Length: 199
Image (cartoon, rainbow, N blue to C red):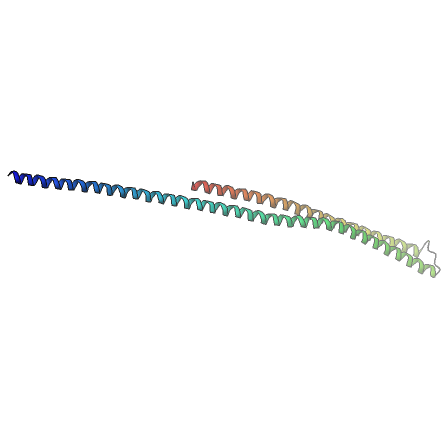
């Protein structure tokens, strides 16, 4: 009986030892698997964070480029409006010079007409101080006055329109620049808000 009991004791001891070792090995394997899973999860989080950061940087860069392009386009438009305003101002000077030339031409035509009449009437022996020659001279002066008044009115009207155009163009240029600044500020704020929401 004693040898059999000893044999069973040895067997159970061996099985228990084996089971103990196996349990320890299994525990070690489980711990290793858990550590590997934790490392993988950590790596996944790091990659995800990196992707989010890159996406935010790209979105911010796109916003800045969009704002810059809009500002450049607005500045070009405003510059063109400023140039058009300067052109309208220069046209005012040209219109004034043309008005002076028109009035000078009217006066020359009047003097030529009076001179031709005087020569014609004098050649025919008619007294130039009264009668038909006097009426003709008065008519020449009247037509010249009408022409001069018309010329002055035309010049003033054209200059006034050019002044108004120049003023409107300057106002438009200033408004274009202000609108571009406001639009750019709104775009930047919206981009910052989106960045903040991404965390």
